[in-house]
Length: 536
Image (cartoon, rainbow, N blue to C red):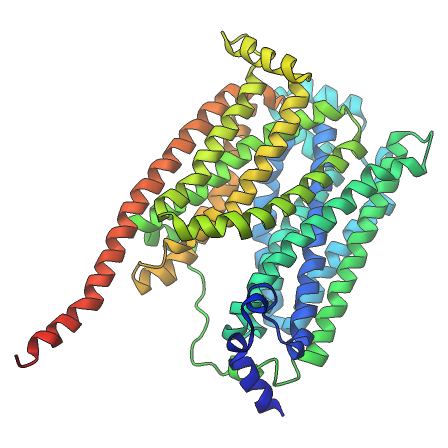
């Protein structure tokens, strides 16, 4: 019986009609494996959106968007390193299944305690505003650090919410999926898993919006701050429930799916001839990237995206704070709608526009769309922010536009920023990520295997921390927590990085084309030699 199912799996693609092959290339008997795997991903990503939106609402409304740069640089990065060390220790002493539960449980405990214990007692656990104001007045360059300490429960929430994405999605889920999904299945499963990922954004975005904004109608006359506390409890209760559901599904798969040879080749994986290579360290990663111009340029692309999107997002979130003026429920509801439309646009753009662009246009034209869009969109966004300053022509030009559409600079920047970030991330998922991966294909096998790990280490870390570092240094240098005041310098850095990004795409395009030509020439040369040896 199991051999029949194995044969079915091996010929799965050929058995589907053209429409089924495009929309749902999953066999009925495979649903026992695919559906719980997809639901685990849905639960993790559902929580990811709830936590991501809520962490920004808490931190930005308490101490401003400037705190984000300090938290990312001085808290999230060290905490991520500590997590990796702890995770490595856990994998040495626990089974893989138990590692999943051990990693997930502390997250759920904290987020539950935060909503039902810590937040209702903020006055007792946080120092008074008078003490904070006095410290900030005496040491203005250390304001960001004081905010982190004064609102320590928010800071801890932010750090754990940031680590959730890396720990539970990138590490726990994809490591599990890559181990239990066969190569032939992955070609059919993974595309649909990305659809589930975007659907999770859609549903979780609406959940955030309902719990934060629509819930107000059930509490007429109640103070907004009290309603926000109730909203927070609903959101964190959902996080706990989804986390428990993920653990239940994970356990069920180990009992009912991974014990069945139709779905999982446990012995084959355990006794495989190839061992998984460890990722290179930081020093070795620098050496590998420096040795290959192509890898250096790919790393620059990743870093440029991280820096530019961070510079825009921090300014945008500060404008949202001004727009909602302390209404945390409204702020969080807006972030829920933002997540909802990000999922919608990612699905639409990725499957209807991005795929055709990759098929029709050259690599350079497809790859350059992302930096050009971010440069133009970010430039317009910064123009609205900078219009508050007395810059000749710009202030009058923006004022005429605002009058014509009947709005004000803060509202325009809030909604415009949301639209630009949504479109930027949709384009990133559908064009930037695929073209970046395509750039590895013509490279040598040795560079390709070691290089990707090295770029992940260098480019990923530097990209996430680069924008935060720039803004952090500016805030300390000018002794302020008003990120709008450093917007002119941030715009200059933003524009320069975008132009370097476009230049890197052009240089990489030339090198990738040359490497691809060399690879084709090497594959043709033996054939020509053999042909010349044949008798006339």
